[in-house]
Amino acid sequence: MPELPEVETTCRGIEPYLIGRKALSIDIRNPNMRWPIEETVRELVGVKIEAVQRRAKYILIRSNKGTLILHLGMSGSLRICPHETEFKKHDHFVIGLGSDIEMRLHDPRRFGAVLWHPTIDGPVSKHRLLQHLGPEPLSKDFDANYLVTSCKNRKTTIKQYIMNNKTVVGVGNIYACEALFRSGIKPNRNAGNISRAKLTLLSEQIKKVLSEAIKQGGTTLRDFLRQDGQPGYFKQRLQVYDRAGKPCRHCGSSIQKIVISNRSTFYCSKCQR
Image (cartoon, rainbow, N blue to C red; front, side, top):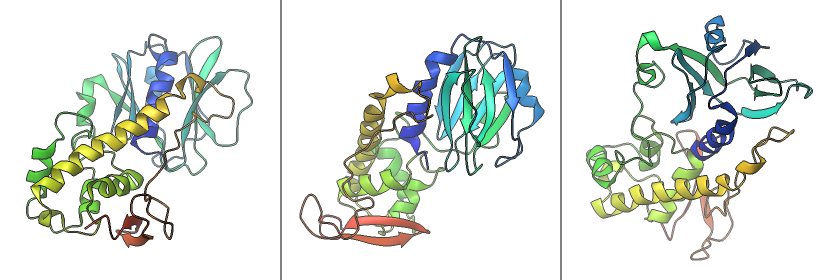
């Protein structure tokens, strides 16, 4: 599923085509998403789009009238394409952006979401889906002191803890595995039993692995306007994720696979303690 770097790449990719334009039309081709798409989303029509932002894995298309909240779910993607482009089976939501182009939400599994938050209801940060989220991992609010303090006396595994959106947003399965490897921390250790030095390193590596992924994704933004709807997501040289049974790139030991909270988890038993 799209993780934080992919969502950030998507935001940066669509932004040049949306900022300063008016949404001239909205076509709800299939309202049956994770939550039914309500007619209130049409309030964006005729209003100039002022900003495209990301909060966790939510894409926020902002105007002075309200904010359109998009989530890509398990399989969703956004593409910018000419009006005459043939629709695909799972193109469910369309914003007309002018005489030449439109933005389409493509979501085969329909776990994505399209929601409207009017300005009169207050800041979009107060929306029910956003109000309880933890800090952004690349912000100053997420640092060593924050992680050390929040982990104190926690009995849950460190991998579960950093993947909890109330702790920090957007650290998905891939990046949790990779950051823990870089930090030398075994993923099933209790969060409350890890040293300050290790947690400090982990906070730094979470930032680094996400920043690197975004940077690699950013190199493909010039190709965002593509007929296949694929924004050209980066391909990292992953150290442990999905490499069970293969040699560790650092020590040569076999990468192990376990399941934590129903998620496949990969680690090196020699490099991570």
